[in-house]
Amino acid sequence: MVMRLSRSNFSQKEIDAVTRILEIGYTPMGPEVHQFEKDIAAYIGGGVEVACVNTGTAALHLACQAIGLGPGDEVLVPSLTYVASFQAISATGAKPIACDIDPATALLDLKDAKARITEQTKAIMHVHYASYPGDLDELYHFANTHQLRVVEDAAHSFGCLYDGKMIGSFGDVICFSFDGIKNITSGEGGAVVSRDEKVMQLVKDARLLGIQNDTEKRVKGERSWTFNVTHQGWRYHMSEIMAAIGRVQLQRFQAGELSDLRAELVQLYREQLTGVPGLTLFDHPLKEGDKVIPHIFPVRITNGRRDEFRDFLASKDIQCGFHYYPSHHLDLYKTDYALPGVELVESEIVTLPLHTLLSRDDVMQVCQFTKEFLG
Ligand SMILES: *Cc1c(COP(=O)(O)O)cnc(C)c1O
Image (tube, rainbow, N blue to C red; front, side, top):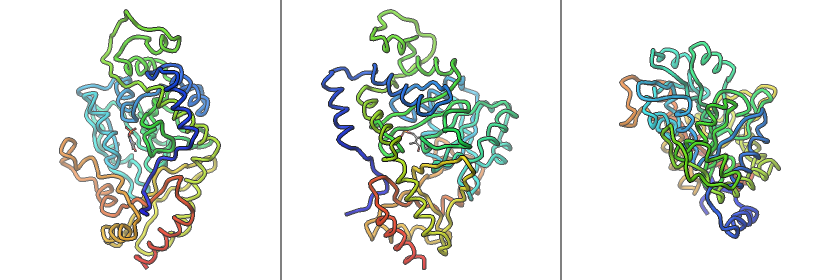
């Protein structure tokens, strides 16, 4: 059997939850979505508001729109991210400005970002690559100094702690993804989280075609027959079916069922692979109060044999991944400058299997083959 790179983990509880919604017979956004938002807000804490949408990409798009981005604006964003980050920015008409990363951490290099600031720069999109937020104090200091709004692409870091605080419970506007393989899933889905009431009202309206206060009416079981629209909106709301899945996943995640193993398997990988010649782990030192629940486990193959290594694991029925093909190489976002940190990592990176249906023995097997190939 092929060892998969990533997988959803569903139990009878998710199946029962979906059945319950189908039996009720009402699937658009209603009380279940509202309850999922309350569950997430309670889990994250910090008095945040939560708006659930149908993908993480939609969450990022609405966040960018709600902070006022539009044509003529520029947004700093690391090139090493899923193209969703770039698409969410360009969907508003703003221009994503591809920035370099620190190859040791794969996170945004603020020195490079600083050099790309212009009169048009309005925001910075910070990507929590592989669930590591990096130094958020430094990031927010940078943003304040340059008067930039911050959108955190926290698609990888649901449930992670920074300095004792849950990701999303502080900061400007934070976006999560609940697609099939993320830390929790609602089938597809995502959420915008913020304490900025103005931003959240814009997001809530914009996910329902810009219909003012439609969210509030749906919560009360009312319909919007007459209404006003003042902003461009989209059809981005979450369905009751998705919310029902998401609520069960959140409960299982909080119970440790979908979270503890991720951290444990990455710790095992790190123990086994530290010091293996030709392989470099990303440097993600944890401080007191930090907790990471890793979504993916990328490593660098530094002896020039990455492609051979990937083929070798494939021949052993082990799936690997590539996170990510840099966005500044895509025709739509091509830059006339190089990004050496991204390009170095691009040539070396490979993602090893990580999900909650993997066992410690599976990880040991991947490590054995890795050592056999590199040793
Ligand atoms: C998954 C992901 C997204 C988008 O989320 P979807 O729910 O798939 O739309 C955005 N950014 C990053 C870094 C992601 O991994």
